[in-house]
Length: 147
Image 1 (cartoon, rainbow, N blue to C red):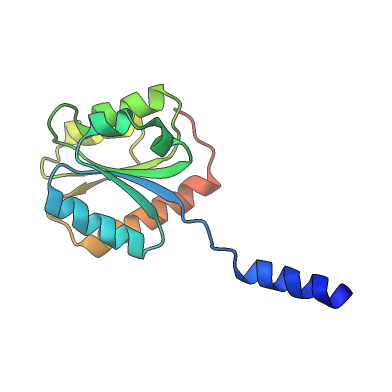
Image 2 (spheres, rainbow, N blue to C red):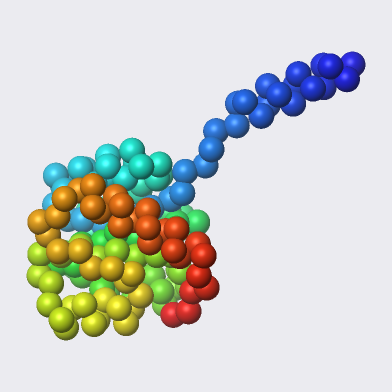
């Protein structure tokens, strides 16, 4: 009887699938979006990808439990900085990375104010994005968030 219980516990433990941390990806370029989605999924994230910030804002279920956001800056409807500001106003506290082809000191400052951990300039090496996301998620899990 005890052996059956042990066998059941061992079987149950081996069938547990690890939960992937949820990551929100917002990029209006379909090729870049798909490429980053595959890269970040390969690094162990449950990637929810969106073509616009407005679509993400409308998907409250996806926001729940998301540990990070990777957002393009210049997009139709709503830019990445405004997007993160809206998410922060709604109470979302995850780590955030802004990607842009339009980096400037002003944009860096605006991004920092709303809570982006980092701004990466396009074009970028995709592996660098993966490493940056892993690093910011690890750092965010160790530090208290205040926005």
